[in-house]
Amino acid sequence: MPRGKSPHALDLPRPTSWLDKAGVNKQDGAYEALRSAILTKMLPAGSRLPSSRTLAERWELSRGTIETVFDRLHAEAYVTRVPGSGTRVCAVVPERFLMAGLGDAVPAPLAVAPAPASDTGVRDGLPFVARRADASLFPMAAWSKCATRALAAATPEQLCSADPAGLPELRQQIADFLAKYRGVRCDPQDILVTTGIRHAIDLLARSIVREGDKVCLEEPGYPAARALFALAGAVPVDIAVDAEGIDGAALAAHADARLAYVTPAHQSPLGVTMSVTRRLALLEWANDHGAWVLEDDYDSEFNYQSAPLAALKALDQYQRVIYCGSFNKTLFAGLRVGFMVLPSALRPQLLRTLQLTGRSVGVTEQLALSAWMEDGAFVRHLRQARLAYKERRDLLLACLEQIAPGRYAISGQQAGFHCVLWLPPGSDERTFCARAAHEGLALQPLGDFCHSAQLAPAVLLGYTALNGPQIRHAAQKLGRLLLLPESAPE
Image 1: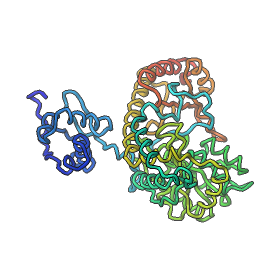
Image 2: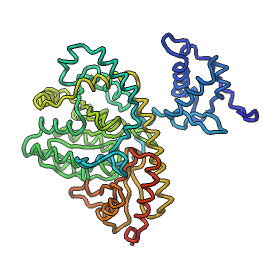
Image 3: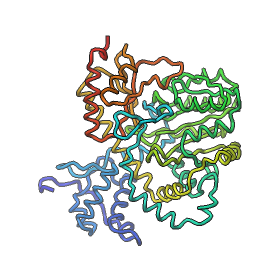
Image 4: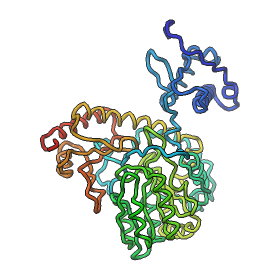
């Protein structure tokens, strides 16, 4: 550091509790000490860390060790490193974006949600396919070590007589994660391991829906949910969505409904967050009429500007909510591990259906995932992926603004894997998508999520599985399409 630029004189005494802990190497000890200081706000947001040379001398470590620790904290979004400005604590601690707030509601961010059931032909690197995590960010070496260690320690009983509800160790890790980051307090016995959210919907439809039962669905909403409930003989009922989420007044008119399917964190596909008032009203409706509520919490791990509200399940004092989540979105699509948190009254019924259909998750994946979560690698990966996805989102929006300013509107960019691009009034979604396909762009019309609703023309833009050069190149093509006379407002 140049002599003329002295850092703030932060009092960071040598953290002997970390550096001298048995079994912890110096680099990990220094990392945990600084991370702990940031999380406890001993180092507040915006504060400047000493130079690596100063801190190395103070803590009696090599400068290379401190530089490695600083780089690690930067990669996980705890600090920023700007040449000439040194290393500073980020304005927002990463855990805040993962951890659900249990207090006042935050302003409802817009986000978008899963596309229809079929992914035929989808491949990574194809702009702008939605719902795709970037598998290249997944730390395969760390995963392999956890998997190898877990398999080596597995007992014959675990390998050959696994619990049909899921590996107890994995269910414990899921319960711990939900309690800390989604506000859901549950017992591992309440959890049923599935292959993903669609599997959870299918199990529920087979287990509790009878021929002719009404099932209330958000409109617009997730097409796969409608299709799965219809296969079980249910009568789908469209319930409109407004700025606060599912319309409570419209829902109240269906006292005889068996179930309501909702995406309260980030409505699929409009992206509104269900207000606390609507959440409480939904729970009252379910309790008053003996109905069930299926909460699909598909992408709450990725918030770029605010912490998510606690899950609807966290408010469920009546035991009417079935909560479902998935690791397939947060890690990689081929993992095929998800879960449900069930009210005790439903557990035996769904477990029977699971055993009858024979669709339990392989024990190898469960052992590996359990060990990986226990090691803290899952939360670390979420932090790193969130930072990467935010950078890609920012790049996409900046490119579009530079190329085609004023020709479109964006919503849903605050969270998730994709955002909504609203086309000029009078545009035809499918014509626009067809033109985009000729340019090698895969866009999905917002109308694919609509059954009875009539919405303004829009398309979904996925960006998380694209690298920087791919985003720049694809944004150029998309911007040129938006500049065509047919895309301009009348």
